[in-house]
Figure 1 (cartoon, rainbow, N blue to C red):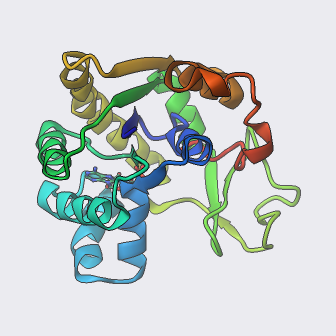
Figure 2: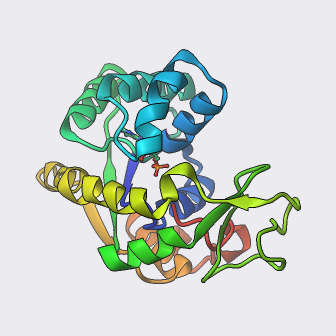
Length: 232
Ligand code: AMP
């Protein structure tokens, strides 16, 4: 089964991606993470992507398409993949469809985590990550024991460069003005599942899993939950 998770930043798609990948044994592929790794490693693609990333703009299609399609090729799709953050527009969706078809595969399901903009704004402006490993915390909903210090590794917390208040509104604009139209693309293909992303992590997970694999319903995901605040 090949799945796409669509949701604005702060919708919880990173958290759900981790749970679903674990429980359904899918290979996760998150475009934002691939880009952050490329930027940190200062690869040519990372250096080209950095100015866009730092402004909160979408990285140019060709750059991100090449990166993700290479990752999909390297992952293989034997047990299925779970895409998080890609595609974000029609060009990317069509490139993905073409690549999947070339591999003899297809996207089976597209899950949209629906969260109103005001809640997203609130979640994102209080989200922090640790400098050492990027553990995600939230000063309102999931604070560290010592303010500003990661519980897991003791490193200092910082805001992601694209989580600064002035960038957040811009990124949400891009989602609601551009990415949201992908929902029609997948709805017309009868692949879209809309989930209320304001529910708890466990409730959202159960709703998704009841559609994808009812045999897993009621097996709590809590024991494998990542940090509650990792709403990316
Ligand atoms: P995310 O971690 O999904 O919130 O993505 C962080 C940033 O990476 C976005 O604001 C974009 O700058 C960039 N990015 C991630 N995925 C894509 C994509 N599919 N297309 C273009 N830019 C992307």
